[in-house]
Image (cartoon, rainbow, N blue to C red; front, side, top):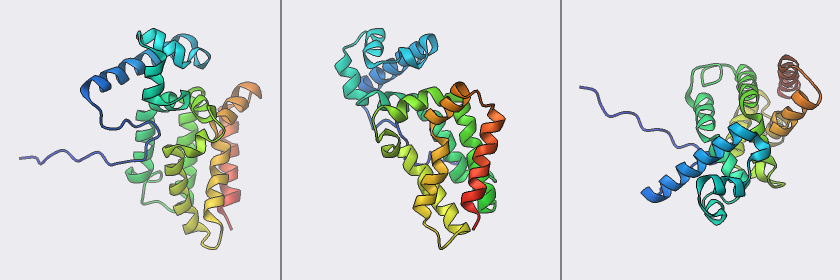
Amino acid sequence: MSGPAPRRPTLPMAGAARPERADAARNRRALLAAARELHAEHGTEGLTLEAVAARAGTGVGTVYRRFGDLAGLTHAMVDSQEYEFQRGFLEGPPPLGPGAPPLERLHAFADAFVDRLEAQAGLLAVAETASPQARYRSGAYAAHHAHLVSLVAELRPDADHAYLADALLAPLEAALHVHQRRGRGMSEERVRAGVHGVVDRIARP
């Protein structure tokens, strides 16, 4: 007889919902569905709290109360992908997950992050630039940073691990990725190679 299913680990998600009443959960799902429809139809340019409220047939105050601001809404829209990403580097197979040497794990993290940016950079850029500190105050950034601190500490015990973790995350900013790919016309391969070059230069003594 099989035992109970394993519990989903608690991860510091950027847009994870708090425990909700059934009606609040329904409202949240309706607002997210409206946001995803607008994004599919108009891209990030059409994604505003007012437009989401109108599409969902509710007042804009409801959207503000539920998500706080546009950053909160867009973080919630990518929450499931963020969960899978965090699960991958915390408990997934190597080299992204535990079991590989730290430098290999840093490169695997960079690759996986670029994959996410290729898929969701527009939404992530909205989430990260909605306010001056939006990216750095998110639960996602805290989780990414803590993970990189632990890997850098293995590679360079005498270095400033917190600073170097920030430096490794800097070229993975979503708005920068959008600028490089669309504004500068860089290929995915060029961006990916550049990020790996940063990893090598920062992580090696």
